[in-house]
Amino acid sequence: MDKFFQLVQIALGRRDGFTEVPTYADWLYMMDMARRQALIGICVSAIEKLPEVQCPPKQLMRHWAFVTGKIEQRNKWLNLKCGEITALLSEAGFSSCMLKGQGMAALYPEPLRRQSGDIDVLVISGEGRTTEPVSSFAKRVIQYARGICRDAEAVYHHVDIQVATTRTAGGKVVALPVNEGNKIEVELHYRVSWFYSPLRNIRLQKWFARQCAFVRKSPDATYFMPTNTFNVIFILVHIYRHLFDEGIGLRQCLDYYYVMKEQERDAVSLKELRQTLSSLGLTRFCAGVMYVLHEVFGLEEEHMIVPMNAKEGEFLLKEILLTGNFGQYTGARKQHENLLSRFARRQKRNLRFLLTYPEEVISAPFWILWHRIWRWRNGYIVES
Image 1 (cartoon, rainbow, N blue to C red):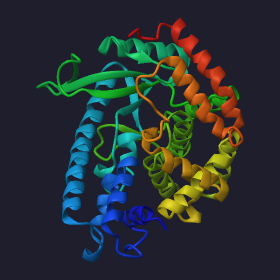
Image 2: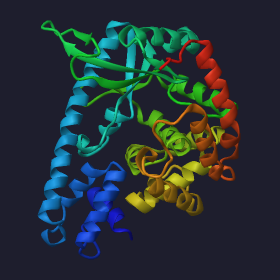
Image 3: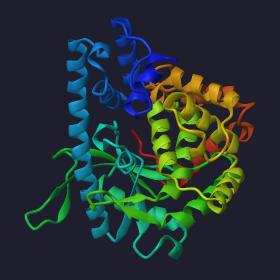
């Protein structure tokens, strides 16, 4: 078994140690993989469990410990900001729920060691999302976002803002001018996610609309997180989107591992869940993900929501190891390219998935064209 996979399984308590003592070259390889897959903090938890003879050289341990300290500090700051953003949205009449990020970290045994990026917030109408069409609700959220950040860019499912928040002496949370304070990137979601396929997307939006009102409090009770039932579908869709748009990382898969471990199953709920996966066209993909969770993290078959598919899983695992977190290491993602070049590159890359996920691949160019026109007509494209 790959030594990096062994290291991750040690962190999860699936193994007590390596099958053989790693060499210095092995540790350099594992450090590089941990960096590519955004699992540095997780791997440090593994090192702390190792017998001394299997630990890395001290200079490498010091480097890993330093980086992990930075990860923990950032997570503490992000937890604070999640509470402040929740309060800020509440003042504006919105309820909210933290997607991915800190909401997902709460499922980890050591939440502060999950590497997080920006903050994703599902914004919910204070009166309930069923009281108005999502299109008009989205316009309200975008208008609110542009009141904070004038150049906020809106897409189909969210609007991006940079915001700095602080609490006044009276405890009220206020937004600061964007050139002050510690800014954080925030995605305000009025739709949770999407599919390129029109039929699957309609079904997905209806499913999310039924589920989004069910939330639970964070461990410190300062913000809200989705229920596990919500995450079973949402995190799988999130991984699916990464496959087409940027590249899958093992961090996203580890999130789903903890969702699977938390999921309580009975015959009725499992049947309903599988029907949902089938209606969304995700059964085959989910079977591949189950294989990845088994091979990399040691997920037991009794925790799987569908039987794993080795052929599908090997394809996905190869893609994961090739691209790394957010596709940063293979050209799945490039900086400073024009719109046409980006479109051509992504469609060329997605042709690799044509035989596996034909409906999504064929729908992608049409959806992207429609989306560009939709953004232009609504004034959601910010001119650079």
